[in-house]
Image (cartoon, rainbow, N blue to C red; front, side, top):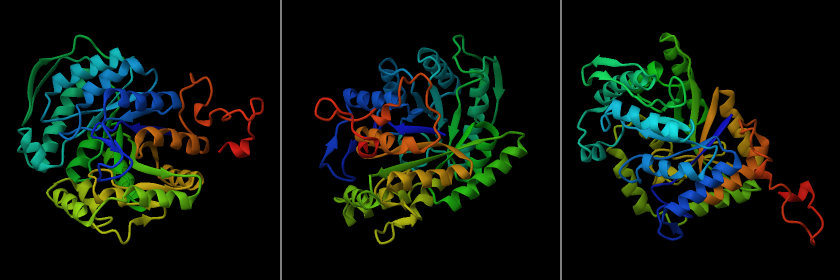
Length: 380
């Protein structure tokens, strides 16, 4: 099981949709989060992409020298980037980081934002472009000299001269919920991602994608993108969930949902259908809470509960074949540590062997009266 965290380059804070308790995502703050993720043994971290964020490649590059083990899940954007430029960027980052790059393929889902970047293709055309982009990108990163002429893209003698570390290329992650997205994923990617839908819906996706990949003679791994609110008791966790949306107003919900309605992303529509912009029924599956999606696009659900409950829910997804989990929590610095301390010991993790000791258990807490170690039962 691989656990990744999130680098919040679009902002952070203690509450959603409020300036109260908000934090500027300065380089020193992002370094704190990255170094915490690195120290605790997370597999890596996702950096978001879009006009509401700092550029993921620039931020990730700035964090290479202040980290040692963690991997960076950074987006390539078909239509915004040429595949050969993206290949050179990936090869350079992978080499300079010592093989710590993961690639998130993002076709985009907001027509207004895409138009601002000069992209006017419709939904399915964007996935046609993505298909051709990945055909070129995969071959170029694998050190082929590529000639390609497609419906949307054309290259002649495309190549990289300074290859990356990972062969044939860094793992490709991709989350598309439409038929067009499914076809691209089955053909090209390594890890298919879903946002945090209830287990029954996630199971349907996993089964469908396995079948499509098999038609291509391929196999896929699976991942899920979720928020998490874990506390020592379930009651405390639900209190924290309600506190997170303490300043969310009906007006802010309506404004956010109006924006999301313009998206042509099938995944965003599936997220919105879990709550329909209403507060009255946010627990959409046991311990799966859709409150985040009232005002936040993309990943809109959180696992809520005690460490034992959260670990059990994670294992339910794992039983479906999901082994990559990308979590986040507000604020991201403190919650990265809280999640590791409380939940890591309950999961079968792929933790770097080079960790000298499991940092997430402290190892014992503060020494009592300058001489005694607290008992394990009291350490949590």
